[in-house]
Length: 201
Image (cartoon, rainbow, N blue to C red; front, side, top):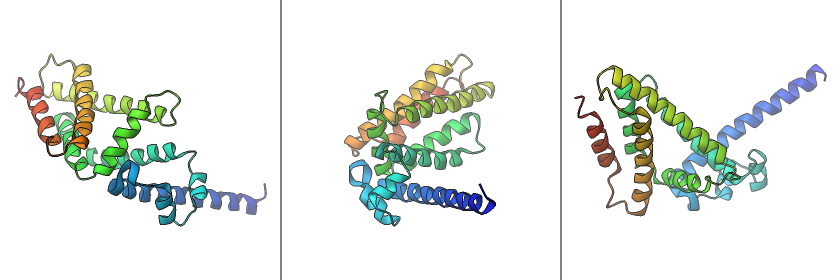
């Protein structure tokens, strides 16, 4: 390959990555506002100046796009947790639940797609399996640090507490989506954390 051809390839690759990032940023906004059913590929394609076929040139399927929208949101959430450790990290995760109550469309997208992705042949199956492994690891690390700091009981079963906290957050999201007036996600999670910490503090 000549140097000029190599520059063209690099330029095309860079433009493709930039367009992909633009699509993801716009899709996060669309799904945050409109939800899983309300947000359409056509709306996203129009918003970034592409046809639907052009949009899917950057993603293998709608499901892959949706999973990467959630991954983009996760990246923003992790930035909010940056620098926190131990109990402060756990509390910061709980604070994300408060933030989630302000973006019901993304909560709906997550709840719907994660349920569909339990099928092993689903395009987002690997994404969700990896996401849960990553979150369990981060929370377990924080809980071990909280034990060392004396913020939770020394005999806390970290694995069970980690899985329980994630299950509570996901279950709360589903109940909240079905009946927002009856379910106060932050309050319920705060009560769980207070019980988790009570014997130590």
